[in-house]
Image 1 (cartoon, rainbow, N blue to C red):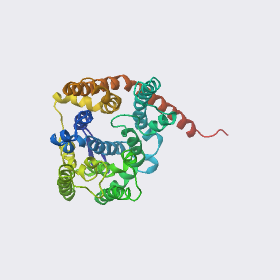
Image 2: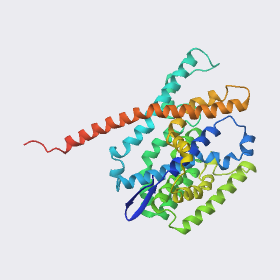
Image 3: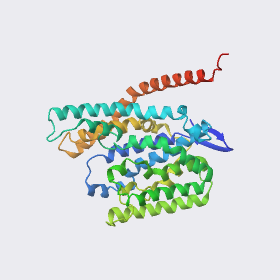
Image 4: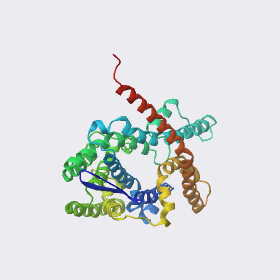
Length: 360
């Protein structure tokens, strides 16, 4: 069902296309984490479509959270950082992550103790570091990035909401500035991958799309020009071996490259009003996408080595990660809901007590 509401005389909508996009993107994530060779990735054109999965998730996050802010009528930083307005997201991100992290830690601890993997030793403090850096496996940067998203989203939202196109441009410049300053600051690849700043512009464009849609023709034209620039950037850096001077890390998901998918994202979320029921399984995968993402972190490497026949290993990884991720989603979601409900009840009771006047 299409949900609509109004705020500040602007109409907003959230539709099933979001879950459809998430379903497609989580399939892309599982696909890209197979052990493809560099040549295979280029032949399949992975930089142009598969690598855009997480950037699309960032666009969706900016878009959906903007709709949420307007539903909740969040109009100040005090509102945005109020516990009641970020607690649900924090719990939803953290509980399933902690389950996967603990499972990974136990397996690694056993493997290390029994010397199941040659030369594998993990010291106690490395587990603590891993806890705050996303654990182990493919895509382990995602949880830390989501926590930073919760922290910085209000800033991006209010900048874009107040200044519109100028705010969007400011976020683009901030993103580019981060790419520049990482060089003299000697930011490592390991730190860069864990940092939310590389996604500032994507989140900002998600916000802009939710607030203003395609009302500004110049922005629409600029986004198309940006997409063409992104395609050119990917061609020269990935296929023609051009060594970029500033955009040196994670080039296929850099601020220039990801401009490629912005017009496509806008076209879908602003024009798709109804999704055919044939796509419901894909939409369900979209709803389970975070759990699938977490499940594939430890499973990807294991399942991709089940057979010497590559197609068998690929199918085992691809199907296994999706199926187990969905099972994890079904089994874990009630736990997250119970924890969230309990925390909100306690928060409600606390606020009620604070609101009561002191006795004379």
